[in-house]
Image (cartoon, rainbow, N blue to C red; front, side):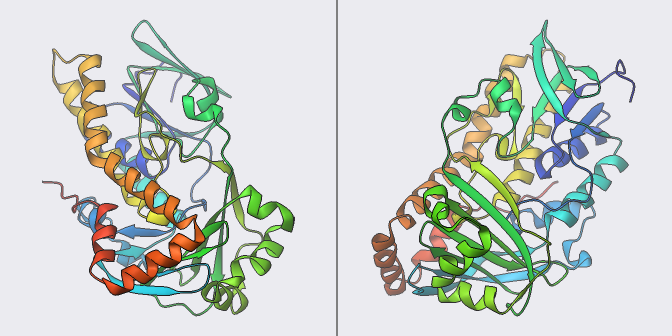
Length: 377
């Protein structure tokens, strides 16, 4: 795309949220440019369980996860650091698919819909005279609207002086794929001292193992292998998986300073979506569904904005804040509460015993972190 070409919307970040927004905007004839720093396909640090709430939506895009090998997931297993466990049926169910595959499928769909996609890194965004000026390492663009969909944290957050970026976050995220035995219909969440690990099968029969820990718990063990052996494997469920599986990746993927602080859905007129707007604790799961849902939400509001002659930016931003909070604020709060309780080992053991005594409660808690099926009419 020429630097001076007409652009209605620049989307910074081509993950689930950004690509979803690009698909719908482009289908309506809105000129979209997606700027993504990575190439496709690529593995990302992410739990790879997806709630069925967005399955009808994907199918409306002619994307059938099961045709690409996704695993149908219907059961949930939760364990404490002392290996006490409880299992339940997932109220809505879900599927297991890697970001490597799902991002690639959405990227192909975005390009087929007419979105322009470039591989570059955005270094600055300025809002001047009702226009966004976007600088990358290689070019400079102008657009009427900008969507921030660049993930958990970025140098852009510092450039934009976002509140959460000034607060140090003590969390480290680690992801790997394993070859071994694990039920295809199960998503498991196993707590250990200082964190928790999610396990589920993906489309190529790999086990996705993704965990969050704090630096205080990790620091004495120097490296990931040692930490997994000495800390994660004290949970017998994790011990069984890690000791009887073979690593697929040459080395695990990591992200440092993962932040769960509150973020704003609009920053300096940029409409934030996905993890850029707010990240749910992995302990509550379902971040992939939320990202896709938020991309759909922001795109629909922008479509309405461009079609209304008297629409104002202020009204658009107000509507987006309201609708984003309605859709996700409760989920984020619930996830934060759940994670806070499980950080206290003694409390988590008591909670699990209570859940065993009242088995109908756990599915209701799960429902609080999930939404209704997203159906496009």
